[in-house]
Amino acid sequence: MNCNYLKNLSKFLLLTVIIIFKSCTNSTPNNLQEQEIQNQKIIVIKNVNIIPMTIDNKIINGATIVIDNKKIISINESIPNGAKVIDGTGKWLIPGLIDMHVHTNADINFRENAPTQGATFFMDTQDVMTPYLANGVTTIFDLGSRVEHFGQRNEIAKGEIIGPRMALAAMIDGRESNGRVVETANDSRQAVRSAKAEGYNFIKVYSSLNIESFKAIVDEANKQGLKIVGHIPDAFRGNIEEAFVPHFDLVAHAEEYAKQTENKTRDDAKYFAQLAKENDTWLIPNMIAMVWIGKQARSLDDIRSLETLKYVPPLLQNKWLTSNNYNNSSSPEFIAYVDTLIYFQKELVKAFKEAEVPIVAGTDAGTSGVVSGFSLHDELELMVEAGLTNEEALLSATRLPSEWLGINNKVGTVEKEKYADLILLNANPLENIKNTRNISGVFVNGQWLSKVKIDSMLSDLAKRNNESKDKYEWKKRKEY
Ligand SMILES: [Zn+2]
Image: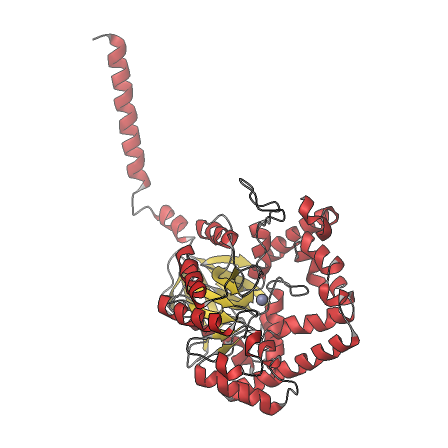
C-alpha cells in the first residue's frame, strides 16, 4: 500500500461526503426559497369570468383558477404560495378551441419514391403550429394524415415543439389520391385494419369509394373501434339515403349534402338534416373553405391582400398565387355554382340546428386561402351568421368536438382536473363571437403564452417567411 493510494482514498471519501451533503441540502423540503422557485410553475388567474362550456354552462364571475402540472387543479379554492399570478379582472376564460378539419403541412417527398429516399422538402413544425396556438386552437383534427404527422405529434409530446393536441385520420378512397385505394369489401376491411395497426384512431372516407367499399369500411371501422369522418361518396348521388348506415359518424363539409341536390331548397336541407339526425351523423359545415373558393374563382386579389398570408409557409404562398386551380379553371358557371353552395351551406346549418344534429367547427385549414388558426374564428362568425347563437358557435369548437373525438375527459370544458387548454379573452364572446379573436393569452397543455409572447412568435414567423419567400416556387418543387 503506498501513500498515493491513501491520498486518493481520502480525496474520494471527501468528495463522497460533499456530494451526499450537497444532495441533502438540495432536497431539504422546508427550504422556503426552494419551495417558491418550485411553485413558479403553478399559475393562478385571479378575478376572471369563466365560461366553462359545461352542459349547464353557468358563468363563474370573479373566479380564481389554479393551474399546476398541466391541469386545472382548483377553481375558487385556496391560492398556493409563490405561484405566478395573472390578473383576470374584466377578462373571460374559455376552453381552448378545436378545429375539426385541418390539413397540416409536414415534411414531404416531392420526388419519386426510391430506396433510402426520405422527404425532399421540410417543414419547421413549430412554424406550422404557431398560428394555431396564436389563435387559441389547442386541438386539431388532421383529415389526411401521413406518417410525418405522427412525427409532428411526437415532437409536441416530447416538448421539442409547442403545439396543439393532434387527432389523425387515415384516408381511404376508391382511386389514386393521397390515401389508401380500395375497390372491394375485402380490401376495404383490410385497409381499415392496417390503418388501426399503423396507430390511427379515425378513418376518413372519400368521394370515389364505391358503395360496397364504403359500407365495408364503415362496418369494419366500427368493429375495430375507429370512428368515421368524411365525404359522401359520389356513388350515392341520387340515392343519398343509402349512405346513412350506422356509424357513419361525421360529414366533413356541408358541400357533401349540397352536391346531392339540383335545386337546393330549404326542404332539401330539412330532409338531409332528418337523415343525419336519424343516423346520429354529425356535421362539420366547413363554410369558410367554400367562401374562399368563391373569392379565388373571381380573382386572386383577396389572397394577395390577405393580412395573414405572411404566416403561411412560403412554398404554399407561392402555390396559392401561381398554381391556383380554383382560379385557373374558373368560369362564370363555376362562380354561379359556388355562390349557390355558399348560400345553401347556411340553409343546411339552420336546418341541422333545428333538427338538433350536433354541429362541430372545422375549416379545411391548409387549403388555399384558409390560414391555420385564424380561419377558425372566421368559421365561428359564419356559423353565427347562419343562425347559431354565440354560445352554440363556441360549443361547436369546444365541448362537442371533444366529445366526438373521445377526449372530453381531458379537454373541451373549463373544469377541475381537465388539462389546461384555455384562452383568456379581453371581452365576452357570448356577447359577440368576434371577441374570440381578442386574445390576452393562451394556455396549451398548461403552458402559458402571453399576448406579448404570441405576438413575438408571430412576428418572428412572418419575418422568417418573408426572408425566404422568393426562394421557393411551387412549380419547381420536384427540384428541392
Ligand atoms: Zn379537407
